[in-house]
View 1 (cartoon, rainbow, N blue to C red):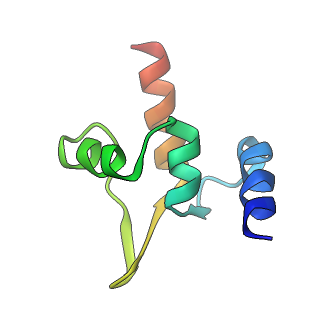
View 2: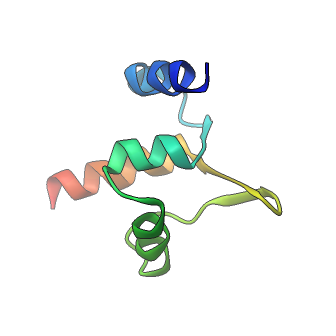
Length: 75
């Protein structure tokens, strides 16, 4: 079930509002990176930092991720 939801989010990523929130597995799929690489790139300022919802739950704003991916494609 979880993988189906992730697949749906990835297929419909371009239709999500910029204010939507995504979790780490979606980010890993979008960037093609491991969890460790994602957090290393966040530390280096290459990927936007997450918003902490709880001590164990982090999310990213779709608009921030889109802008970051767009700047990587253009630069």
